[in-house]
Amino acid sequence: MTAILDPSASTITISIPIKMRKRGGRKLVLAPDGADWAPARPKVDNVMVKAIARAFRWRKLLEAGAYATIDELAAAERINPSYVSRMLRLTLLAPDMVEAILYGRQPAALTLAILMKPLPVEWERQMQELRFTT
Image (cartoon, rainbow, N blue to C red; front, side, top):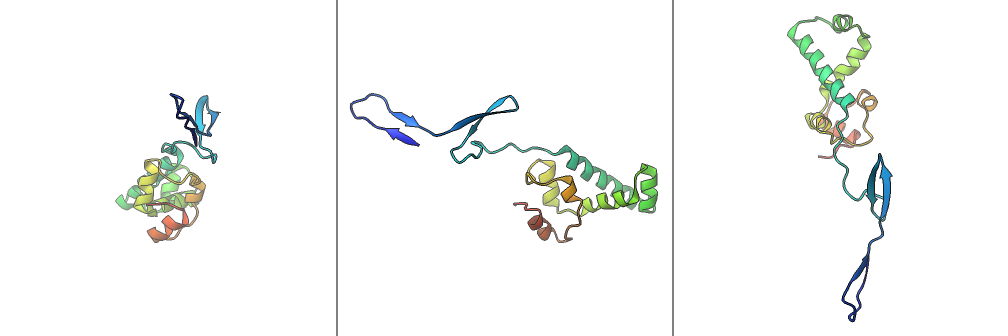
């Protein structure tokens, strides 16, 4: 940012090096270093939210005794038992991570495919591995 101060002039001129870009039909102001001018709004990833909700529903069905095994649950849902097992791992995520995902505050690079990979059981290590900030 530069300012031109002329004691004889009645106006002050300020120059701010910004760029305007169109994204999705909207204009976006970019800062001089190329970063977004304003922080990005939280974006809820409905795919992750739906997967987490499904996993907790399945866990509840197993705990309530509606199905005795994962194989029975998978047969009732008409899906592969290994898929059910991988989805059930989502119920072991740190509560802070689940809350962040529900409110759209997860890291931008996080996807359902990354969440479905084996993660440490310890919540703090999960947070570190997936780069969540508290």
